[in-house]
Length: 172
Image 1: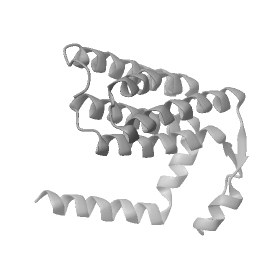
Image 2: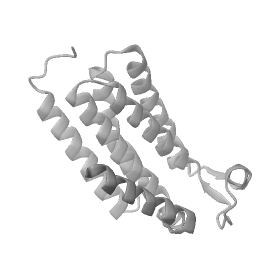
Image 3: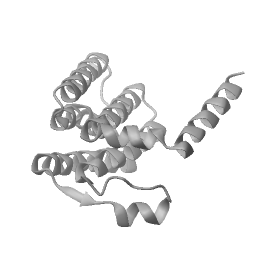
Image 4: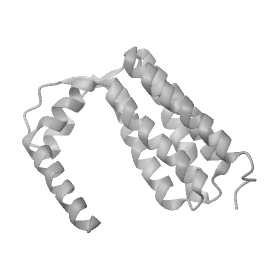
């Protein structure tokens, strides 16, 4: 088992509050770096709480990815996405350069899902959920227009509708 649970609910609650406030402030002020900073307490406590080899490595990787994200967000590093996107999808691309920081939230979402599935404790899962939600908010705060464009394509709309239908069928 992980360390003593006595203070874990309070610590996780404070970390959640920090993440929520960071998300709100970062999106409101259009400062993604605030959102990126707000994820760090969740990652650090996740590192402390995880015990397995792979979950510990994933937690440390999340911290490394976040530190790199802070750097590329601060420096406003841009990358050309045309060569990458056209290999996988045949949707007309209207944006050529995107913030390099968009890579970090995608990697963090993958790590958070891994952590959520591989950890057994309620608090490590709680932290993984905070990391997941904050990562999605970071992606949105970096380029809200890109998110809007991605969600408005006919193929994505169809996938969303099918996913909702499947979800409703699975509830019954």
